[in-house]
Image 1: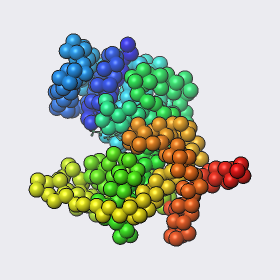
Image 2: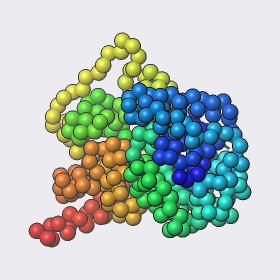
Image 3: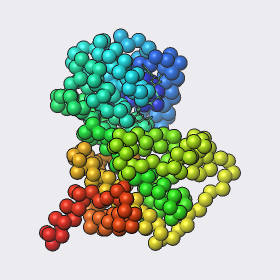
Image 4: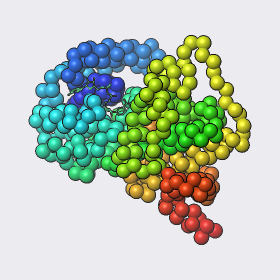
Amino acid sequence: MKNIGVIGAGTMGIGIAQVAAQNWNQVVLIDTNQEVLDKAKAQLEKTLFKLVEKQKLTEADSSKIASLIEFTTNYDSLKNADLVIEAIVENISVKHSVFSQIESIVSTSCILASNTSSLSIASISSVLKNPERMLGIHFFNPAPLMALVEIIPGVQTTEEVTIAAKSIIDSWKKKTVLVKDTPGFIVNRVARPFYGEALRIYEEGIADFATIDWAMTHFGGFKMGPFTLMDYIGNDINYTVTESVFEAFYFDPRFKPSFTQKRHKEAGLLGRKTGKGYYDYQENAIAISPKEDVQLGEKIFNRILAMLINEAYDALFMQVASREDIDTAMKFGVNYPKGLLEWADEIGVDNVLSTLTDLFEEYGEDRYRPNPLLKRKVRELQLGN
Ligand code: NAI
């Protein structure tokens, strides 16, 4: 049993605390707002009750799990922590002051982690006296249900700290992948074309939302099409992630945000949570049918998949993560039906390259440039034959 501290009892913090307690760790969940803590406690009790109802937990285990979490506003409760995971607001100056405060309380052997999605580990750890003990531990929402956790050592993190943190999260029955401290880590980087290229296809007038969604679910086996998924995530959140990745990559056109999504965000058409996004979720709304044209559907699917594979190749080329981890991340972080690199092998890397080369020639835009590693792989295969 370890002592785990979780800072921030919002969407992510409460989920992470639940995962830690379900794996029999002693947990301290801290928030500055008592009301948030009370809500988090009530929410956790409700979740545990549902798990008992579904016979996924015994009543005895459920009460034991609930008793393992201390909900408090007092940072001093962290003094025996072995690992502290911060999940507060995505703001560098607030994170800096929280990490300085935590470091003044915990022991020197305590590992410090941030659940940040878009800030670098290097920038967060810069305020620490001992930045070697800090890394990123990035859970996905909802944390108890999503299997993937990205483990992100910063430039100063020691190997011992990375190994120890990874083994704790592995023991929580999560699938961990190791990733360099680069914008979007694996998932939020590699997944960008799923949204961006779908929006681009729509903006060019090639197909409407429903047809693009149909193409990706029908031919690709994705659980949700891009527009349904963006409506589910929220156009505000999804747009902000794209914008932050675009800026962090020094405005590389591969990640360029879309006016269509920006306008939807500005208009308050955020998706499910506002009742309207690309689709209408209000009562009596009329469902829009896709145009089930096989040739068009395949063209859309091949284009988006080729862009996704190109991005996965880029992550591999730039040594952001291993081949296996890039595929694991997309299967377990965003539930893709297959890993993108294995998918490329299955359909033929030469086919992927030819789709990208055609797009690059047609548009002349840097966005469509095929990755050098993909080109190399095709060349090697051709030489081998
Ligand atoms: P949230 O807004 O739901 O919760 C943040 C909580 O932190 C709030 O309850 C707030 O009262 C508390 N807080 C603020 N300042 C504090 C302080 N100084 N000390 C203690 N508590 C404090 O935020 P959410 O969505 O849970 O995100 C948290 C972090 O996780 C962010 O860094 C975000 O980028 C990251 N993340 C979010 C995901 C998501 O889907 N929401 C997915 C993966 C990562």
